[in-house]
Image (cartoon, rainbow, N blue to C red; front, top):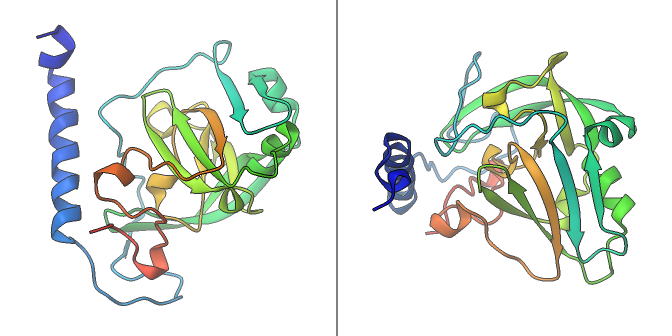
Length: 220
């Protein structure tokens, strides 16, 4: 057995994954009450910023950070930090809804619209889905149409300050209309596909779509 397989971090990661898979099997937190209020069903408001990850928080120097956009595109892109910051910068205020039942209102994000970087790459007509890849090995999937929404951005700052390492620095995705596991931290690649490919949690019992107002927490 390798050192990594026996490490405390690996053990914590496996324990976390196992617990969340049990939540999915048991339907934990489900209320069965769909609706369109600002606070989705089964959620509670918090003031702080809980930290959830796979037990790995990569530290990525800005000079080493790269964002790749590839797959079904005409012109694959590789953006370094300087090129990314030269793109049109936007600010969006949105709510966070985590599948573990907490929500936080009025988060002010600064960054680049996901639509901007994807359009630079020129999606091919058959591109209909995207997989987001993170530095910690995490993946999650979205329909391309959802990723192109005007409120979706690749954020480098929160409330006027650069993102902290535990919150996805230097760049994370923000998808306000989905549970927050779809907003991948530490993004390094956006891969466009013709077919849907479930990501890390989607393969482990979480819903493929993740609409908080429809309470799409789990797939079973």
